[in-house]
Image (cartoon, rainbow, N blue to C red; front, side):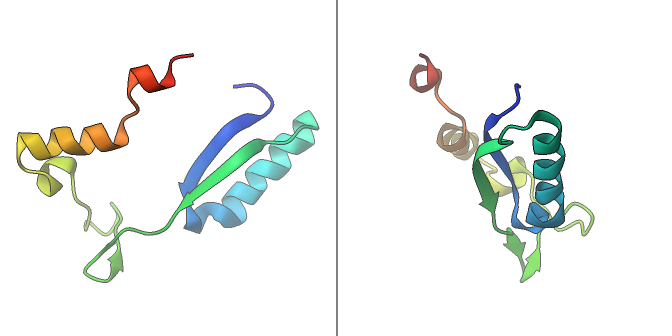
Length: 87
């Protein structure tokens, strides 16, 4: 990956202490910035509770999008298209 990565993502609940520790460890070891851009997502809630595997209140893609066309539409939305990322 190199000394500095372009984008690092994670849940807002990992910002402290997990991501701050990653910064301290990586920058302490390399002397260079760890990351150029951070993206933190909020929680996904189901029935007013944070969705998590440990609570068993998560949805699979098949449960959330039971029709094949819905699955294709979701994937089209979230998966980068190869023509857009070519240099």
